[in-house]
Length: 358
Image 1 (tube, rainbow, N blue to C red):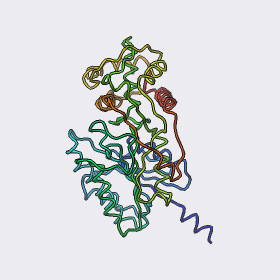
Image 2 (image 1 turned 135 degrees about the vertical axis):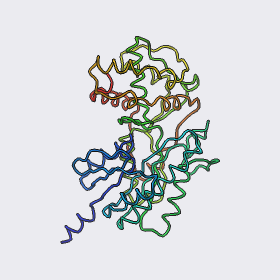
Image 3 (image 1 turned 120 degrees about the horizontal axis):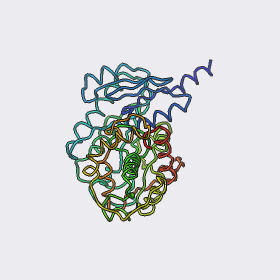
């Protein structure tokens, strides 16, 4: 009898909001390796059900739709929030991204009496990293900065909402996330792989396209698989209740050392960096990409699905150090790390296996 009860108590149901993004997709893949979890994925597009994971399509900007879709899931124990909607300005990002979180939490809270934890995916925007040179290494205890910043608004909402409740929250702060996902606006590894593949097809060397200073600054990234492990750890370890954690690979690099290694992977030469907007210079490359899909027998992904040039321009414009202190997570018990050079090569291998790039 007691055995049965303990098994029942262990059963966890994750509601992953933003299930098709690079973070959500890799989180679901990791949860499915853990036998005690069932997964419900939420996105605007829905998804294909498989064993232990089913998908729901929902418009989280519509409180009614959120209530109808997410409020009818009494089994949910953990809400993992990794949704994001892009807007042209920092100020315009606040309203939709706060509304989606509020609508999700209110719906799940009302419909899921066994809710134990809400996990919020953030990033270094909390530290003002997107605005210009910021204090590095950034720490979770650093002072806030002048708004607007939706990550901060989201966390303040959770902190207020959680008071007196049975559930707890955690805020996870990765650096730039790298992993596999298509049609995702924030995927650095895909930007590099497609840029390299097109450069190679044109018979030109692989040039770093960012600001001159960005080639030499200290950088770090976060592997999507590592991020998934850390997110589940923080959501299930009682010590992490109501805490924020920086999560990064644990090593630092400079593009001036990484770039030639990436070129070598693709069998290419490098040439001196040349600052250019990928958004501009890659805008006319769709016909070339379609020819490459035919010529190399690639999977039939549209140019839109494999492009996130604006994000590449953003990351390659950081001519200031970009890293945070990851020791708080280690002090609280998370000890995993990833070698960044190996991570890039593994993702490129994966993209080749999936026939996304030649």
